[in-house]
Image (cartoon, rainbow, N blue to C red; front, side):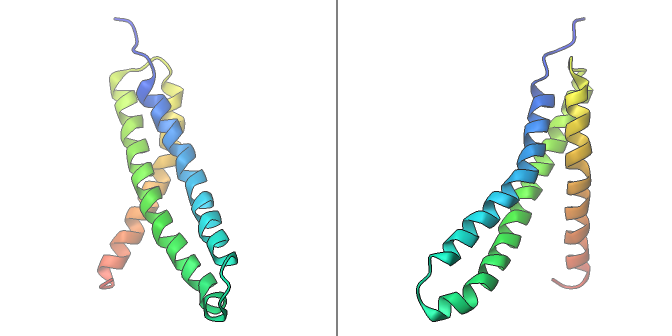
Length: 113
């Protein structure tokens, strides 16, 4: 039987890139919104609010992309796709990110957060 095309492996790598690039883009987005504020109160509290918003949104986005990337990588390995190195690279990047986010979530739950 011929190996299958590497759709899931490529998706895993794409999700790995998104897991790294999207938090930077989210931080730039919220940071640029703060720079455009004109009121004194917004200039005082804006950076802190932008930082918290960046952290929360980044955690959510990275959690979703790393989960989908890990799932895609596992599916690629199980299916026996032609370019298995794509799945391995995706799992190497997405796996530790997902484990870290699950650890943070578990610690928050244990501390009542």
